[in-house]
Length: 281
Ligand SMILES: Nc1ncnc2c1ncn2[C@@H]1O[C@H](COP(=O)(O)OP(=O)(O)OP(=O)(O)O)[C@@H](O)[C@H]1O
Ligand SMILES: [Mg+2]
Image: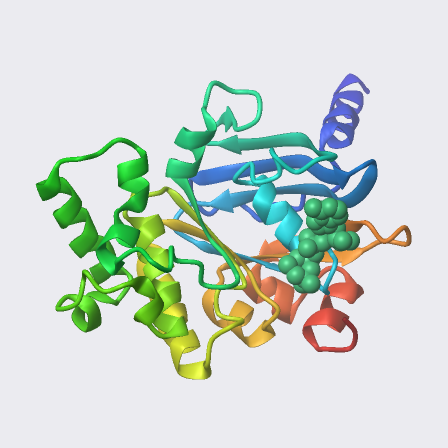
């Protein structure tokens, strides 16, 4: 009887929204009951899942379901937004990124971000863009910066096309090249996690494919969390997948989190299947 009570207590202690697949490796970030509101209106809530290291995790869901809002919370990008409140816990290697002793600069060095529209510093050279984060962190030694510029541009599959024109302004690059420069800029800091918000939505299919290949090749070094509207992309490149949907009050919530294979082929919730099959949203 006692044992039964113990088991029941244990089951009840599990947050109901945590749908974490069997552990598949060490965890980079843990989200526990994360919610974000703006001026008291909840934009996204009930988000509990683990971002497993060296895997690509995709966030999918209809427009307005809170994907960008959730992704930005992982890098404290709401800190300066008036009226924004992030609750719950987000842990990076076990440290609470909001309440632990990690500074915002340290966090953003360890967790990089690539935005929807390529946003290199347009008048800055390709080289200066690539090393801008390192310079911001106080690194001045030319040999170190040179080395970082080359290795990050190589990692972003851009070195071969820009090595002879590193001093040219970043605005001369094509959209796809600019996005890869932004990826290089983030990689130069050797982050543990790279957050990407629809990084290919402004790009043509060829540039999109290059970035997708890049993500797959990078995951041995960096854990990727990507927001995408493109179901084929999520299915192609992600290992794990979180599906968000708006509730009746229009707040986004996590409906299901699992391996991408399970989300696309055998989800628990019928709404997940409806969405991945394009039945709504
Ligand atoms: N700075 C803000 N102030 C007030 N409301 C915001 C702010 N940022 C986002 N929201 C609201 O939060 C909700 C979720 O928006 P979010 O941009 O996260 O959705 P999304 O899933 O990324 O959508 P999309 O697929 O269109 O990019 C929306 O209702 C949006 O209006
Ligand atoms: Mg968005």
